[in-house]
Length: 292
Image (cartoon, rainbow, N blue to C red; front, top):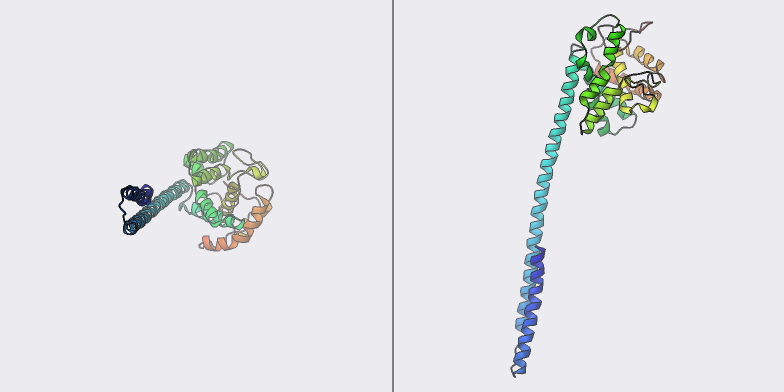
C-alpha cells in the first residue's frame, strides 16, 4: 500500500515533466501549447490517486486491526480456558489426596480460602492472593503415597509411621515439579515447605525464618488452624479461641510472627464463614496431639 501511494505521488510530477519537455520541443519548432488544462488535469489526477491510495491503506489498516482484535480475543479465551483447566486439575488433585485422609475432602477448599484471606491481609494483590489460594489446595498431594493404615490410624504414630507421614511434603513437591506454569510452581513450593518451621526444626529441609517461601509460611498457619478446629481420627475439633491461643503460643517457633498477627485479624470471620457446621469446638487439651 505504501508503494502504491508512492507511485501515485510520483506519477503526476513525471507526467508534468514529460509535458514540459514536449512543450519545449514544440515551442522550438514555433508551436505553443496550452499548459493550464493539461497541468490541472495531471494535478487533479495525482491528488485523486493519492487520496484513493490513502483511503485504501486506511481501510486495510482497519481490517488488520480488526483481525488482530479478533485474534487477541481468541488468544485470551484460549488462555483463560487453559488457566481454568490448570486450576481444575489442582482442585481435583488436592481433593483426591484429601479424600484419602478425610470423608469430605473439604479441608483443601478451606485451606485455599484461608490462605487467600491471609495473603490479602499481608499485602498481596487480589490476583496474587487468588493464585496462592488456588495453589494451596495441593499442599498435601503427597499423601496419595502414604498407606491408609497410617493416614487413618486413630492412635499415636510410631517413629517409622511418623517418618512416612513426613515424607508427603517432598513427595507432593516431586509430583508437581517441572511445570512452566506459575501457579504450578507455587503449588510445588507450598507442598514442599508448608511443614517447615520458623525456628528451623521443620521438614523436609529444615529451613529457617525467611528461608521458607512466604507462600509456604502462609499455608502453614492456615493448615494448622484448620487441623485444630476440625475433627480428626486422632482428635476432637478445638474451639476457635483455643486454636488461636495455640497458634499464638507457637509464634517465633513454628510460625512467622508477622503472619500470626495478621491471621488473628481474619481468623474469626473466616471461621464463621468456612466452618458453619462446627458447634464451637472443645477447649484445647493439656497435651495436644501432634497435628499431622
